[in-house]
Structures are given as C-alpha cells and as structure tokens.
Amino acid sequence: QVQLEESGGGLVQAGGSLRLSCAGPGSIFSINAMGWYRQAPGKQRELVATITKAESVNYADSVKGRFTIHRDNAKNTVYLQMNSLKPEDTAVYYCNARLRENFYTDTRDYWGQGTQVTVSS
Image (tube, rainbow, N blue to C red; front, side, top):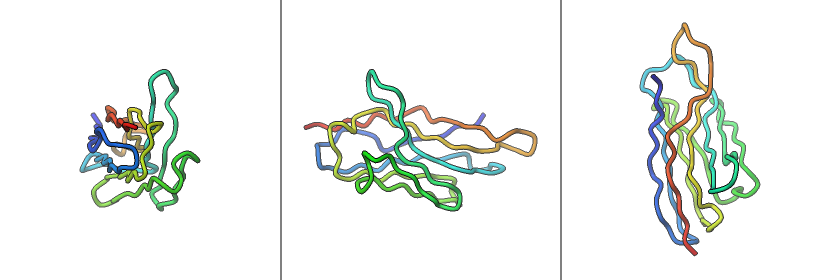
C-alpha cells in the first residue's frame, strides 16, 4: 500500500511562512509528477503547484510569486515553501504523486491524508 506522508501544516499569521513536506515510499518503481492541491471549506479541491520529474513547475495564479515547489528525487519527497501567506490560503493541503508502485502495476495518482494550514488575519 503506497502512502504519502505529509508534514508541516499549522497555524500562522498573515504574512508568515510555512513549509510543507510530502515523502513517498522509499522504494518505488517510478514517480512522475508530484504536487500539492488544497481544499477550503465549501470549495472544490484546487491545484496549488505541480512539478515533473524533470522539475518543470506549474503554479496556480493565486500563489505565483509566493509559493515555491521543489522535489528531492533521491528521497521521493516534494516540498512546498509558502511565503507571504494570506487568510485565503487557509485550507487542507493534499500531496499528490503520480507513480508506478512496481513492475506489475499501472501508473496512477496517490494522495496524502491532508494537512491543515490556517492563516489568521
């Protein structure tokens, strides 16, 4: 069973920073894109940032210039550095990885359990 382990959420004041981490399994056949999504109460889950294995990145317009995604392929880990946080960034943040668990499985999306980020005004 593939698990993505998230950490780094919490409560921060507006203008502050947080760093999220998401670690994939230590042994995996291949990992393609990794990313972060978020879901605020009463809203649909939305893309925050993604990064391919070649480290091509994509950001939601709302976080450009404030958030930075990067990954450590040796550790199968993706990070999200969030600066200049705003109250509207408050949401549950979910890690996503598109990966192939072993030779016998297909590539598919896996999700972390979610980590709460709360930004107070």
